Length: 191
Image 1: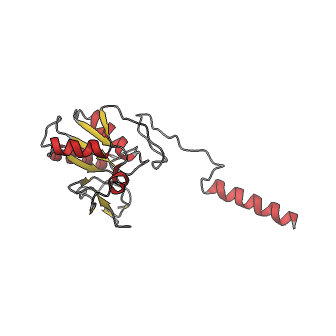
Image 2: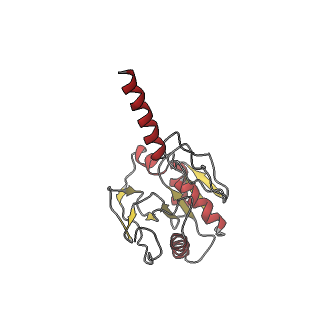
Image 3: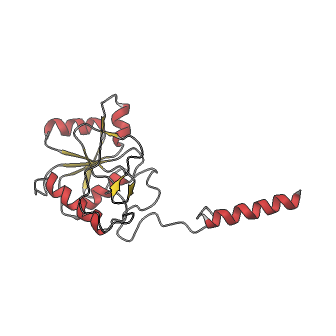
């Protein structure tokens, strides 16, 4: 019986290594450009360079003062065969634009173009247009996207750190959302 237990233990260790489990080397948390690229759902810092961090009251105040502010949801959506796959219902803050997958740590050229083109459209070509990035609480996707917008030269940036979860916990409404279409997906994997 002890031999069977050792064999099972060896088998499970080999399986963990093959599947990239805890025995295998871990991917670095940040890439060389400083974007979070692993463990996106984990505690986030208090702020991001180039953006003002908002809580729910701060976001409501901003929207009252600057109603033309653009809310940008960066929550991920599965991408396969050149299209977004609706794997689950997603709700976000009313009036938001969902730029799915633009908060990933590494963006391939078509995703970078998608992000840049959408920001250009949403800001009406003005780098001083107020843009608010968010995801969920303990989510690095909004942090990455705000940082990326800052690197593109946008100057009036906000990060709603606790995102959808904080909005919902405050008893505020959410609305069913669909991601903005990615029109040129020919170079993306999964096509």
